[in-house]
Length: 230
Image 1 (tube, rainbow, N blue to C red):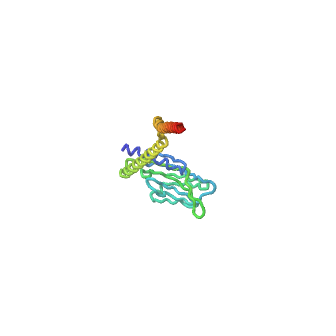
Image 2: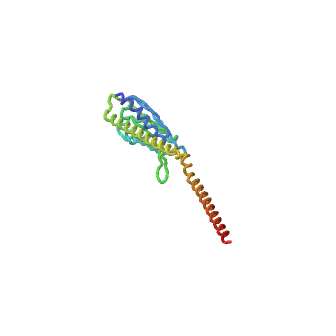
Image 3: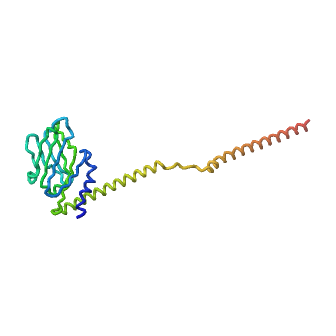
């Protein structure tokens, strides 16, 4: 039961990053049979909308009500008709609603949409805020639905953790590859590469000296023979 009581806190933490398209989220906590006031304001003020709708998502993805300018609001579920009161201010780009006799199944994320004339299709503009409404109603809770909610929350948290861990590993590997040092050739290997060249030069000088000595000897012999002939 304690897990059920604080499940809405975890749920709020998970859905908060997903509302950037609406500008922000408002957390509202109520108890069973209480009421709540919601004020929806359009993010577009250049022209007047012709209609408005209130929707819910996450636990139930559906339209709650639809309001067309000059007409009575259309409530999708018959059991909600006596619980939802609409104060039409479409000309001011605002709609105020009151939901009474709240029950546990009313817990969800609610968002508003303002509808504008546009070609070729109507344009839907979200309200500035979303509303996370949590109704504390454990005396008549549906445990199976709450267990399903906890499973969904746990799975989303695990998936987020795996994604963060994978990104961290990839970043670390990339950083290590960039910082990998280049191999350094030892000094003694460089000296070893130079030594054969010096040896070859010394051998060449020795051979030249020996050749010059041999030529000198041959020349001396020839000069001695010439002396004997005379």
